[in-house]
Image (cartoon, rainbow, N blue to C red):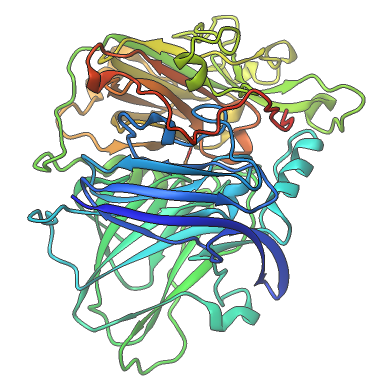
Length: 554
Ligand code: C2O
């Protein structure tokens, strides 16, 4: 195994998109930021220099971080931010996963422009379990605002927290020429040789949108998701929630021409905000004769059957060297319901959420608040009391029956208490979580992301989860492994994982608008009693502090 060492200099710069200049925060002067290319088993060392005016952390989305918990990155969960002018070196190992992950800022909305790909190839002597591609490419789907995303977030929160649409969607940083004629020369373009097979590593880095992805006239074969191999799955459309990655093979087997690849929003239902655009890139065959690219027909924004068919049909490749069988017994059984809620608004705030209050969200009637001044991980490591509680409930309190959609607008159910409440589990416990997404906030599909683990997706469905009948639908043989799963709109999903990674691991909705509302909690996994299962001390340059105050977000 090798050491992959690089530096990230994070600075503001002026970028031109949609025919106008905008100051953005970017890594090493580019949008998206640099791709980290490594092999399974390698050690990655990234020296981050914060030369931006904002607090900063970088999260390595999907990396397990065993024994390197201090490098996970979510602000005030595992570390305090790197102050403007400061620096921090992230060191971690890429053992046990092959495929595509990514990295992004994990403070406020900075990840709108601070993100990039993390590509993990097989270690020397190992091969892909599929045909060797002629070439590989990364496709990062994102969002663009004609504004500074930090300002967009503060504006959204100041106005009660109502989400604000982006101005465009992007492929590798560019909106594409379809609806934005002034940027035609900057549309992402992939030149292909007829007959060759390509591996595309597709990443949804958007803040607040799920995307359908298609390539005109071409099928794709899914071979991996969230850096876990899948059984080959043929499809002409993908669905990616924010945080998810999908690796596909496609063969340039159509008549030599120009074909759009395109991403359009999946917004689940009317009322869920999205901008109506489609972002495009171009697949250009060598010696193409026609000059106008062919556009794929995209699913409607609310095409839940297509979204569900894609998300529920993936299965794991159990012959993968990284597969381990699903644990058959469960130690911790949880049912987590999502609630849309409100937090009381005082007169100094702009109170334009529903009922004249501010928006919030909850899980099991707890609306999560990040600590300030110290991270949860440091509080655990140093035994600092008063930072968090361990009373996150395994089941929703009955009085807050968020599975009953009629309760959603009952005002007495809407004010979930704010707290920093986590779920504590023993090392190596098997944890099963049923996510129930049927109350008002269930009008959209929430991409739930767990740090520090892959989980097995045992089953998904619509309506309310019924243990009597739905446990029979569990796939315990080859369920897909994920770090992020879109819980079906108006439905449920069951995940299971083995808590074999001590530390504090954030579980949250990857729609960034729901993060400051409180749609999250964390798992506190105890040490296991051996050196390999014990949280080590933080590195010397760790941004720990006593003088921190988180910018007020709620
Ligand atoms: Cu991709 Cu908690 O993040």
